[in-house]
Image (cartoon, rainbow, N blue to C red; front, side, top):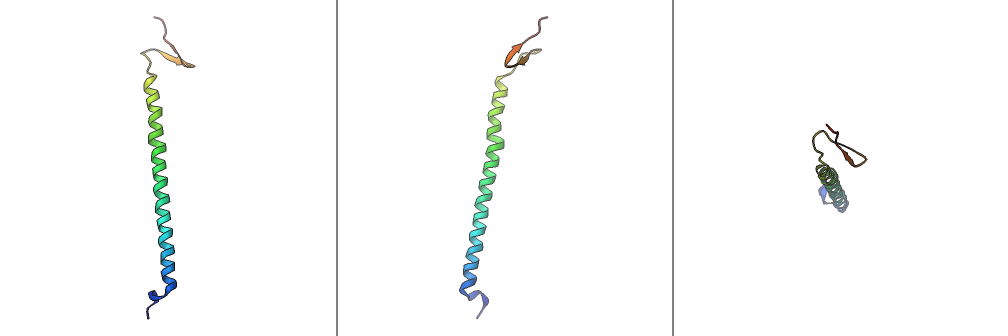
Length: 70
């Protein structure tokens, strides 16, 4: 008789397989959230920056565009 024929070793193997599966799912969810947080929500801010392009020699204070007179 071999040690892997015992019923207890099968349940221990299933426990570690379930734990490994849980770790893999949790890691995939974490990576997915990180990608969403850094790239997708950052893309929204980048699009806002494009909308607020000022002409040369102009600046913005409190959301108001000011251009110096020549």
